Every structure is written in structure tokens, then in C-alpha cells.
Image 1 (cartoon, rainbow, N blue to C red):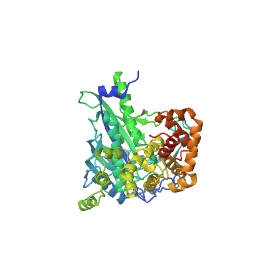
Image 2 (image 1 turned 135 degrees about the vertical axis):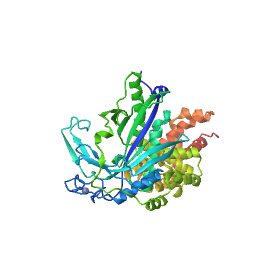
Image 3 (image 1 turned 120 degrees about the horizontal axis):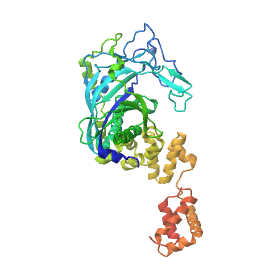
Image 4 (image 1 turned 180 degrees about the horizontal axis):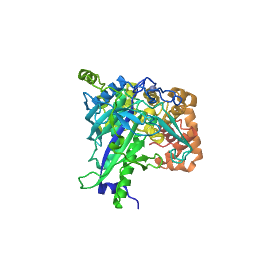
Length: 497
Ligand SMILES: [Zn+2]
């Protein structure tokens, strides 16, 4: 029998940690003037500096430094009064200079924290550092079955991404989360993404790689005081995968430890298909990178007054915005938490602003729309229907134009065609049949076709009328109001409810 998550948790205590890379949304790259726009022809956004040609001198991007400080301030970090870039030396085709300008022992932002709410309680995630570096190019391995370099016929490299400013946000190890560890990891990344979006420093699109997450997991036997060896899971490309990666790694490590094995310090790759991790390379130590201060760049020494100005200019952060939304929406703390975890607070608030009642707005975003999001593995914001359209849908249900079934069909139509609710309703003829003559003949037809059911209803088994309602709904292709149909059927059968 294979090991369950609960088994693993009964014997071991997990410690997690997260390293998040964020591509900043600056117009130009970190150390040159090349464009950062995603999706251009390969190797068209490059120059001598970002290709690292001999003699080219980098100049740091001031907006990138400002954005990094804002992130640090939003995460309650201390801002270093003086720090430097360092060279991280390694060889890989996507890093053609053979070093990456990064920060080592002098990060721009240190010691901070982010509070997240999981299952009604606050978990404080310590932030170890927030530092600035540049992104690498992108390798594409062609011909192999797995898309990995092993087994590929050839590889291509695109340096458009090389040199885009990248911020790395590293948490301290988070112990004590027990069975909630996977959820804490997901909620942390969700909250961090909301903060970054609110600051306007990045478009934080996980599927395009502008927000990338590595998840560290280790286990220690219950009662032990020394943490176990951690693994680092890479390529975790969605919020749901963050949770799955921690969970599967806990089960895998418990299996290894149960069998008397040892956990290797290594990077592992998360597979969206299997939901598990597979072995990557063994993890380098910092000394392998031979860090040294970058000689081509000036130190960064942000003026304390400027830092204070940035602090005062920070927008309202998500936690405060949610508190305000909660009192404006008048929902319970539990409801607010559920909406927060589903990432729909702002959508519900915007739907209410567009005229919908809170309860209806909440039910749509937490109900059918959330289901669609889950089945397509996208966030509610990326579904392809916005708050005003959902408010319009709710209005059409309220005035009786659409039934609940038709309203769902209208949503499907909006997502398929990208058109408005009104267009889809008009084009597909999605309207409740309220013509009582038409409904009466449909009811009579259903009674005639199901004489035994009709007799049952007449003899007092009123619940059996459901079958006839179903038949009428079918013959009107779901376009009748079920309560009206039921009333007409009972009237035709001479039965009172
Ligand atoms: Zn360039």
C-alpha cells in the first residue's frame, strides 16, 4: 500500500521555504536600453551589453532599483543604505557571459515578513532578502520527447529575455505549519502576487514566466529539533502547482525516510502531468559560484529621504484593501477568507460596483465561474469574463429574462466567443419562455406522454411532478422557468400543492 499524506504527517514535520523570481515590468532591460516586450522574434531585443560582448559596460536601471525598494518596503524589509552587485559565475548556454550580475552578501532589502491567513489563523512568513539580478536567456530543446536537453536533436537559445530585471524574494524557512504546509505555500505566493500587482511593478503572469516559484521542502521526524535536508522544486508554474508540489514532495520524502534512505540535497522538477517531482541536478553550494563584487557597476546607495518618500507613496496594500472591501461588502470574516483564497475579492467588489447584489456576485464568482476556472486551470481574472458582464448576467436573471441554466449557457457563450452577455443571449436565443400559451401546450404534451406519472401526481404523490417538469424543460431546451412550469403542470392536473 502506498504512503498517504496523513501517514507522512503523522511521523514527520515539514519545513517549507519559497524563492520567488519576478520579472519587473520596466520598459528597458536591467543594464542596457533593449526592450523587454514579451513574444518578439528571437534575438531581436539584444545589444552588446546584454550579450556581454567584450568592452561593453552596463548601467543599472533606476526604475528597477526603485521597484525593488518598493517590494522590500511592502514586505516590511529593511532597505540597505549601501550595497553592491556581485558576479555569480557559472557556465550555461542561456548565460553567455558565464556570469550573472546578481547580489550576494549585500542584498538591496533584508529582514522582513509577510503575514498570510490560512484556515482563519495568521502565519508570519519571514522574508530573508529581496535582491536584484538579471534574467537569463531561454533555451528550447527540440526533438526529444520530454522537452529536456537529454534526448534532444538540437537546442535553440533566445537572448531576448537575457538582461530583463529580475527580483528574487527569498523567505526564511517556515516551520510549524504541519498539514497546512502546502496551503501556506500557495496562499503566500497568492498574497505576494497580489502585492506585486498592486505595486504595479510586474505583470506577474505565472504562465508566461514573469512570476516563477521554487519551493523548498524538508521533513524532520516528529520530536526532532534539527531540520532535515531540503530539496528545491523548480518550474512550479501555477498557484495550484505550488500546493501540489509541496504535498507530493512531503509524501515522496517520507517514503525515502521510512525505507531508511537519506534525502539528497538537489533540485527537482515538478511535472504538471503526474503531479509529482523528478530528480534534477544536485544542488550547488554558494562557494561553487565564486561570487565576487561586480567591478563594472557602481554600488547602490539609496538616499534615506528618497526611501521614505517611496514608503509614503506606497499604494494601499491588499490586506488593507480587503479589510475595506469587507466592511463595504458587509460579508462575514469566513466569507471574506474564502473569497480571498479563491482570489475573487476584487472581482466580487467590482461586480457589486457594477450594480449586482453582494450575495449574487459572490455566488457567481465562487460557484460556476470558479468551477470553470478550476477545470481550465486558470485564475478567475483570466477566464475571459469581467465584472460588468457578470453584473449584467445577474440583472438578466433577476428580471426573469434568463433562468439559472440559461445564465450558465450565456457564460459559456461569452467565454467561447469573447462577445458580450447581451450579444450571446440575442444570438443564441437564450430567453426564458414566458408565453403561458406555449408553456401550457408543452405541459399538456408532457402529461399525455407520461400518463402513469400524471396519475401518480393526481393520486397525491406530488413529488413525482418533477419528472414532468424535466420533460417540459427538455422540450423547451431549458428555456422555461422551472417554478412556473411546475405551477402550470399542477394546475393542469388539478392538484394543489
Ligand atoms: Zn541590450
